[in-house]
Length: 392
RNA sequence: GCUGAGGUGGCGGAGCGGCCAAUCGCACCAGACUGUAAAUCUGGCGCCCGGACGGGCUACCUAGGUUCGAAUCCUAGCCUCAGCA
Image (tube, rainbow, N blue to C red):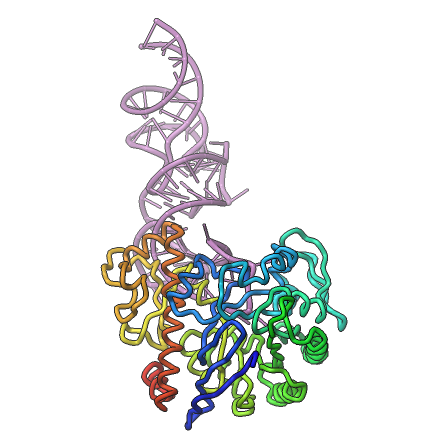
C-alpha cells in the first residue's frame, strides 16, 4: 500500500482521532504537526535538528520552489526533500494560496496577480517575471517536487473579497480541484520519480456550513485520498477556527486524513482543531514566532489561554533570567540554555538565536501533539484539553 | 600658540529667527504574526497630568545679550576635531 490512513482510536466524546498516515517515505503518527519549510528549508534548522525534535513531516511550497531554484534543479535531485536532505514524509502546497494572497491582500507589489477561471496570472516577487499558474502546472510542479502529500490548486475565499468574488472563488476552486484530480490521475498518481503521491482536495467555504459540506461531498465523491481545509477562518483566532471546523466536524470519512492548512491560534487552536477531527496541520507562525521571540510554554510554566501559551523572550524582564524557557521542556534549547541567553541572542540578531528558538517551538508543538496522541490512546483527550485550556 | 570646522534628545545626525519637544537612522520599550514574499511588520520613545486628545513644565555646551519671538543672530567663556607651527 502506497498511502493509507488508519484510525487507531476514536475519541468517544469528540471527533478527535488518533491514527497513522502511511506514506512512501515513512509513517506519520496523527494528530501531527508539520513544520513549514517553504523554500526547502525549515528556516535555521537542518534535517538532523528536525529529527532530533521529533519532526515527522515537512511542508514545502510549489510557488516558491517553482520560482527558485526552479523545477529543473529540483528534478536533478529527485525532489525537494532529497534536495534539502530530508528523508522523511513531505507535503507540498499547490501555490494557490500564495497567488491569491498576493492578489487579495494588495500587498506591496504591483502589478497584482489576476485570476480567471483558466488560472492565475502572477508576477514573480523575485524578478517580476510573468507566470500563469493552472491546475495542470501546479500538479506538474508538485510531481517534480515529489512530496508524499500534495494539494489541489485552489483559490481560498477571503475576508477582503466581495460576496461575488467569494462565490467565484468557491466555484473556481471546485473546478480547479477537479482538474487537479484529473491531471493527477493522468500521471498515474505518481511523482516524477515513480512514487505515489496522495492528492488532497481542499474544503472551501469559510463559515458557511452548506458550502463547506458541498465542497466536502465533492471531494469524497471524486475519491481524493485525503482532505484539506483552508482559508482565513482556519487562521489565527481559535474561536473562529472552531466555528469553521464545526461546519464539517463528524463528516470526515474514517479512511481520509484531514489536514488543516495554516492552522494558527497556538495550542488552543490545536486543541479546538483536533477535537473537531483534524489529523494533521501545518503552520508557519510556529517557526516565524520563534525567530521573532515568541516562545511557547507549557501550562506547568504558566502557559494559559490568556497568555496564548507563550512568552516574548525579547522582553527586558528576561535579560537576567537564568531559568530555561520552559523548565518542563526537554528540548536541546531548554536543557542547555537560559532565558537570558536566548534573550541576548535574539535581541542581538545572532543567528544562533533563531535556531535555538525554532528548535524549542517545533519541539513544543511536536511534544504537544505527542501528548495529545497519548491522551487519545488512553481515551482521555478531553481531560488533557481541559487541563490545558481550563475549559472544554 | 595660530588658522579653520564644530558643540542638538542614550548615540549618529538634520534643522540655521516663529509651522521645533525638534526630520531621519540606530539603540531602547512594547505589540502583532494563516497553506512564510517575514532575521519581518506596527506602535511608543524629554518630564508630568492614568492612555488617546488636549494641556503644563524643562530643553538644543555655559553665561549674558538682540528680538514680540532664538536650537537658529550677537558677545564672552569652556570643550572637541583637523591643518600649521
